[in-house]
Length: 370
Image 1 (cartoon, one colour):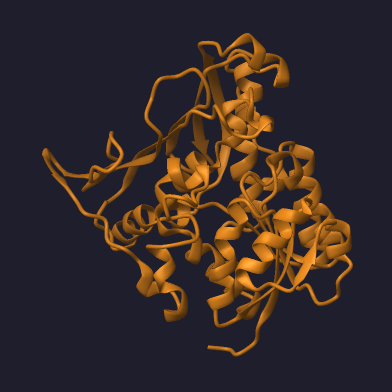
Image 2 (spheres, rainbow, N blue to C red):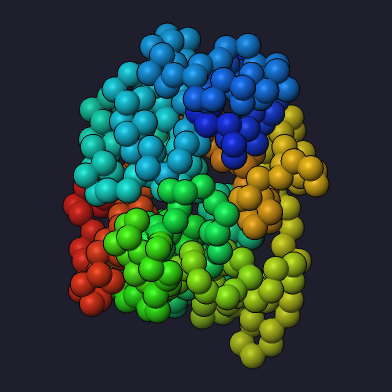
C-alpha cells in the first residue's frame, strides 16, 4: 500500500469521536486535528486520544494549511454550510448523513466538487454495514438473480436526542433507507411519491411545520423497471429501533429480522432459512480490522445514543474511514460521491415535499443524475 498519509480533522466530537482511533490506526491517515465548540469537551477528547491540534472555531480550522480533509459530524442543520465552507477552503470532505437539508445546498456542493476536483463522500453507515456487504456479495455472485423489488425502513424514537431533532420531518433523515436500496445496483432515483400518516405531538409540529408520525415513500428507479418503498418514523410511534432493508430477487430474497438481535432470513423459493451474517473485516487493512467489532462507544459507561439504538452501525465505521482515505490516496471514487449523495439525500427532501402535497410526484433534479 502507498505510504502517503492524509491529515484528517474531525469536526464534532460526540459521535465523531468514534472515528478518532480508526484514523489513528489507519496506515494512510494522520489524525491531525479535532474541532468542537465547547472547550472542555475539546480538551477532554483531545487529552483522551492524544490529539494535540485543537480548534473551537471551525473557520480557524479551515485556515490551517496542514488540514487535507475534514470529517464532519456536526448537527444536521450544519452539514450543508460546513461542507460548502470546507470545499471553498480547498479541503476534501467526508460528512455524516444527510448531505444537507435543502436541494439548493446539495446542488452547490455538487457544483463545488465538480469545479474544484476535491473529493466529497457522504458517510452512509448502512451501505458499509456487514448486512449490506453480505447482500451485495450475494448479488454480485448472481445468487439473488434478477432484483424485483426493494424495501427499507428506519423507525426510531428520537425523544431525548438534541433539540434540533424535535419535530424533524421523518424523510429529512432517510439516507439509511435510501442508501442501501440504491447502492445495491448502483441505481439512481428518478422520481418519488410519498404519503404522511398519523400525527405527532402539537409541540413538535411547530418546529418544522411537519405533522406526520410516519412517512412512506415509493421510489421509481431511473432507466429501470425497479421501484422501492421506504418507511420512516421518528416520534410517537411504538416500535423497537429498526434500521432495515429487504431485497427480493428471482432466485433468492433477503429479509431483515423483525426483532433486534435475531438473524435475518434468506428465502430460496418457498424455503426460508435464518442466516448468520459474517463480518467483513478482511476487506480492511489489518491495522483497523478490530474496529468492525469494537469501538469507542462500547462500554456501559461510555455510550452514544446512535450506538445504543443503532447496534454499532453494523461494523461500518472502519469501512467508511478506509473508503474515504483510500479514495484520497488512489483517486478512485468512493460510494457515495457528491452526485450520488445528492440523489440519495434529495429523495428524502422531495419525499417530504410530496407528503405535504398529498403524494404529488416529485422528480429528482438533473444535477443528481449522471
